[in-house]
Amino acid sequence: MFDALYIGATGMQAQQANVDAIANNLANVNTPAFKKNRVNFSELVVTGIAAGQQGTPLEDTAALAALGAGVQLSSSAKTFDAGDLKKTDSPMDFAILGDGFLELTLPDGGRAFTRAGTLKVNADGQLATLAGVPLKPSVSVPGNAEALIVTSTGRVQARIPNQANAVDVGQIELVRFTNPQGLLALGGNVYRSTEASGEPIAGRAGEDGMGTIAQGMLEGSNVRLVDEMVSLMVAQRAYEASVKVVQAADEMLGLINGLRR
Image (cartoon, rainbow, N blue to C red; front, side, top):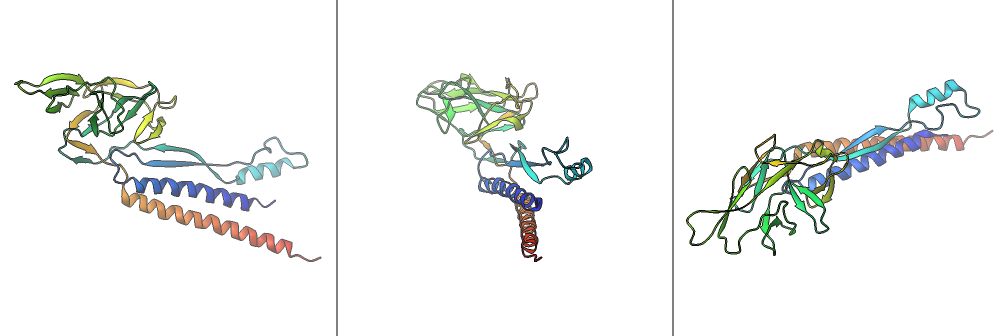
């Protein structure tokens, strides 16, 4: 009978999801290569009346449909705008300048992707993420290597004692996606491809639209603190407005219940 209660509740639920996303963004403002979350909403429509319910005039059903039935969370996706670059001078820090992801080989043999460029040499002597997940294709680093040199095109060289020139040990390749917003976040700045993102397109850094690799630098979070604080205040006010709708509807129902014949 009183749709305002339900509609107000959908508004509160939607803004709570919005606040949750903003809170997660703010918590990761200093996380390297973090990509902020964005929630999208869509209008709810009255269901079950398109053809007219029994005993309901068609003109009334059209009016009800025009009013709508509240709001719903339609999607939540990452925004892959580039973050600010930070110089670290660490030879194991790498930033991707432009489009592209590093490809990883998961323990189950699956494929995953990341832009977090802090790497290490794992127990198998391969370049890997801090969690120990190796790059794909694998890059094997000699155990006696004194230093690694990575060019902007991803060529990896190692300095070996008693050798005048650096030795080639592998190639870091990048992949890109037609729709990166469709990637599934696995946590730890790692993503998996989906039907929405499309299949990964492999290539060499600096070629065919791929970004380049910068050693000794890290990509920062793309969260803008001021923007998130403004969004938080807007979401809070929208939540308060939905609460007022619920309170007003409750008071009106109270008036109805208090009627005397």
